[in-house]
Figure 1 (cartoon, rainbow, N blue to C red):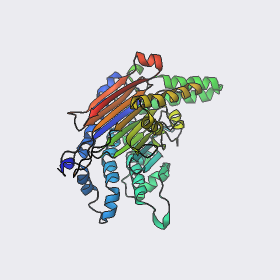
Figure 2: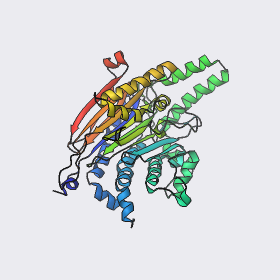
Figure 3: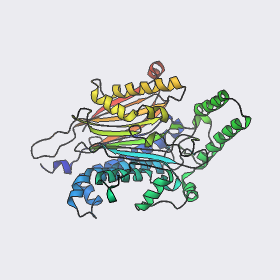
Figure 4: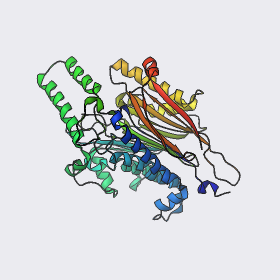
Length: 430
């Protein structure tokens, strides 16, 4: 009985591919990306904690280090990291290959990860081309070093690095990086992303050349946001009408829970179209793009994780992911209500400032694991909730009791027309 939990580990993984507008013509590829991401995480979580520890720490001789870091390193470097890597390699999401381009026509990426047990957090922002494909691994390594404690001479290890500094630090730690931005762009920049950049760059240059007043500039930017655009790539070499293009906001995200109720979350993003070079977005910001915790605000056990996506600046101002987790721990109405409450405040704030109010929030809340004599704790059930104010929101999830992942592009309904927000919720026994 003692080994039952390891022989049949329970798990749950949830992913999202951004809020915004997902063109029906691209839905198949997005659903496929989410399925593959869920299955990749499941293949690791199914094998149990100790299998991953053997893989991760075969080179470690210090048993204390292994015990301190076994959940953190194993699950993050595998379950959390490999999900965004899959999305980054897939030209149907706004992360990595085919991402939105900056004003200068390059790809810069943001990413973060967080461990619910320790609160360890690592993130990178505005990582240039050579580090884009590895951004989530750089964030995970930053977080792992939080667990190891002080570095040489007692220096405090960083949790957040940006730009060229993040790339140099990653290279010093042995992370394999592309040599130059030019080499990285050959793989990262798709033809469709380049065409979109040329279109928007021409609009911006034209407006600047005419030196019109701020109201005209605002109108131009509003037109840019209003047009469904392929900020997530796909269909390279093909021509499509505006109605068949995507307009996907900001991040992809993942939340993983293992059989003992350990939880972690991660987010990654190519950012918004035509962003200023050096702009750091939602996916990198502490408390905003992702959050995970195993305790409530008063210290009682409460397992919850969240990822947010959408109009980044508004979500950053409200610490959206963290606020959702806290609200869920205090709410008697369930996680969907908590998500909707936080998102409503984001929508109201965006309306007051006249900015884009498209956003989506994905939250996973786990029942406390069951502990029986002579047995390891086992995860009992999961509640998953999603709220969104955008035209669509792509989510997927997979649990150990399910035959296959469930993936969906949630679309706006009559409810959103009345309240401005739609939501989804489900309870998954494990």
